[in-house]
Image (cartoon, rainbow, N blue to C red; front, top):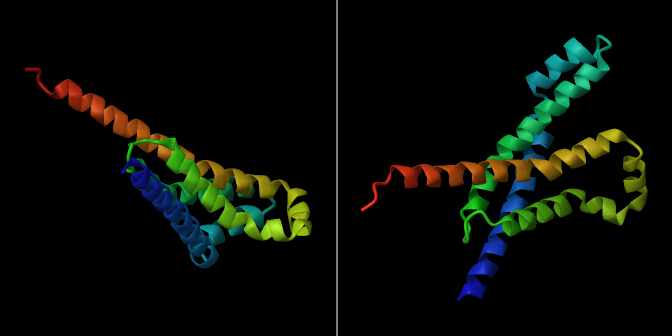
Amino acid sequence: MIMRRTSTAFLISVGCGTAYIYVLSEIFGRLLVPNPINQWLIEKLARTGHETEYRLAIYTHDFLIYLIIAFPVAFALSRLPPKYSWKYLFAALGTSLALQYWPLVWEPSRLLSLAEHWQFYVGLAMSTFALPIAYAAISMLGKTEGIAAAEVTPSA
């Protein structure tokens, strides 16, 4: 019975990782390209010669989007039994990274070409760390809520 529950939890975590990367792909591919925030940043920073400030602002914006999308996934993963198990997070994260970067495996020349640019590493770091940061925040909040509830409960 425990083996079946664990297998189901891993399948759910793989599904969460798939949903996470699908939602991110849809948001970044369709919604954020004509985004007014991006247009404003381009007009105010990139076209006026403030390339570093533009990059910093756009990467901060993108990382916040990653975190916003990561929180529901992290919440779902934190509810899998046993609660707050990091192995489900790593299953979801591995799935999302594999789905996001699988075309590069089949075309090593593209990977080598991307690896020459520092922006690739920033994007890789954002996609690698957003979900664990959201999961850690939810885990800490959940554990402190349990501690607070234990302190409020009167002892018999």
